[in-house]
Image (cartoon, rainbow, N blue to C red):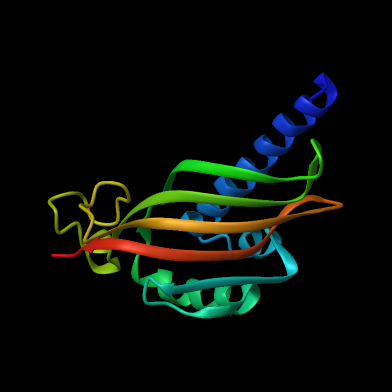
Length: 163
């Protein structure tokens, strides 16, 4: 592998990693336009493995927007990212797959608004999570003119804890 190819591979890995981070930030911040911009035009999301829906990314974004109102305080931690770039005879291709574990603590709206954990009412970040889930994401990405975009995301919930 030449230095130029090695550098291109590193740059692709960093770019793919940035898309995955962008996904977590968009969901946590409720930035649904940003969420949609992360997908290819035919991109799909499958949350059935966590009790959700599956479909075109735009439809799933609307479902997430409605559902996440129940949890105004949330934080997706996406770790153990394994990025596999398509190999075209020693050169990176235009497809990537990512498997990454997640931990997702969330607070219900009533607790975040009431301060039922003893914190001042409406002070985000001080409530105790009502719901924590963990599992694995599987992402398939395509290289586009604008950069890497998600073609599919699938959620595989492994566990959840709720009081």
